[in-house]
Image (cartoon, rainbow, N blue to C red; front, side, top):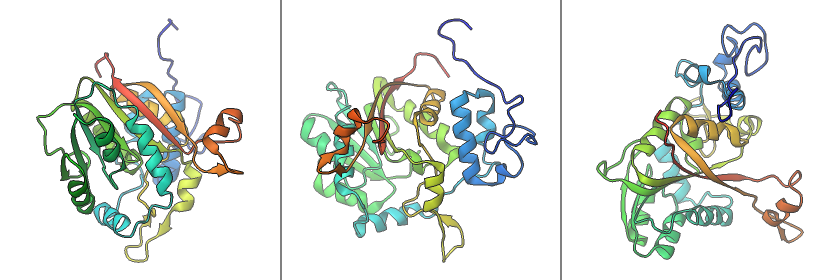
Length: 296
């Protein structure tokens, strides 16, 4: 292999990416292809092995995947009843994310403004910047419009009310794990199309394993479907899956921050993480990306 090439692997003699069964006729066996949690595991293994030839099949809507329910109602309820179980960490995570916005940025967009923490820091640290924001929750948009300067609109991910604009920075914090697998690449490439030539995309995701994700799901007594308390449909337990998806969507990851919340005997776990990296695991990864020069 020449220097600088990306090494890729094939599924030959590997069996099912999710369970390891040798009876798989393709990247996953028939049983795992019907299980949305096993398909998340298969996508993770494909990312780790750089199995590029299987991307379309693993993210195809023909395979099982976790689905969103009434997401706008969910977030209206969360904001109405203050259901954020870790508000201090949420605010800190947004603060750290806004800290990655380039100082020369003149127009910034946030997808999923939520409680408005990121907009608050953008307004405070970038007094001259044009701020735009969208959210599926009409309540979030009404709140942001009343509290902050900027232009805000209710819109689902993938729809931009200002399609003619390019942005120097786009923030999408704790949103990607809510995007159904078949829409991931479409969504990331849509974001890329709205960045200026030197613009950056800043994303954050919770580091949640497939096992932890599965434990959080329950059967909805109203519709009978599997649902998640706050709408997570993807698992990002380590760096490789999200890096893989970003790179395949035309981005270059240039910086990563790991955040560990809470305290241990009064000492912030974020400080202890550097002393005990194997024992103190981060809760969130923040990635800043630029558009890759190579065309996809």
